[in-house]
Amino acid sequence: MEREIKNFEQWNEEMAAKYNPDRYHRSRNLVIWGIEFLRTRAIMRFLDVRNGDSVIDLGCGAGNMLERIRVGRLWGVDLSKVLLATAAERLRGRGVGLRYGNVESLPAEVRNQRFDKIFSSEVLEHLERPERMVAEICAIAKPTSRIVISVPNEGVINGIKAFLRATGLIALFPGISKKMDDEWHLWHMDLPLFRKFVSGKLEIIAMRRIPFRFLPIRYVFLLRPMF
Image (tube, rainbow, N blue to C red; front, side):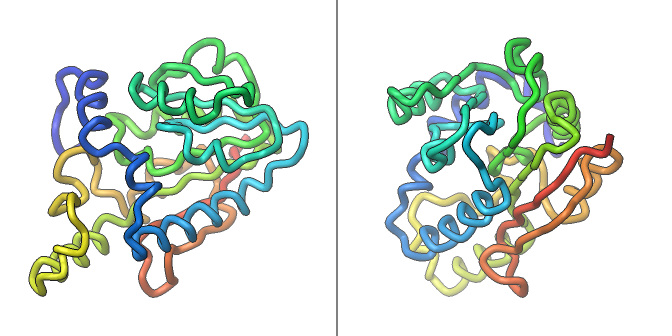
């Protein structure tokens, strides 16, 4: 981790308000929309949720990903009360179990369950100790669970942002930070670092590079527990 956070919960709430992921999911910028479409589609295809599946979104934010799942028994955990309130409104009437908590140490009500499908979308890089979330995933997984995690590829993204600033095209993307790891990202995430966090606990079964193999701005992984 590149810096220490004195009060992680307070800091996370401040970052959630400043960089509300709900705005990103609903972006009208065609480039951002296209990348999100491909990333979300990859996540949903890897999850392959069926009727009767128990599904949990770790770091569910404003419920944007859970909203896309129309079957199964759905749960979500997040550390932002503001984003959870938005999620509750978005998912009202659907019986989704939303819980306040840190994905590095899940609420007992969640940790005592075992889920068929577990996913976490662009969360790992925000955590103080990502390996703890990986351990929590193993704690709530079944041997047959499908686990899906997506993360940014910080080096490529920062390179693209540098190019956009140099050419003046950054004006087409108002509100974005100069670098992905300026504030809310505590880790300079890339493929080797992700492999390090899951090593010995989760096995990578498949991987999608978003939007293209030659330009991996995002990674989406399908994994299974190693037990």
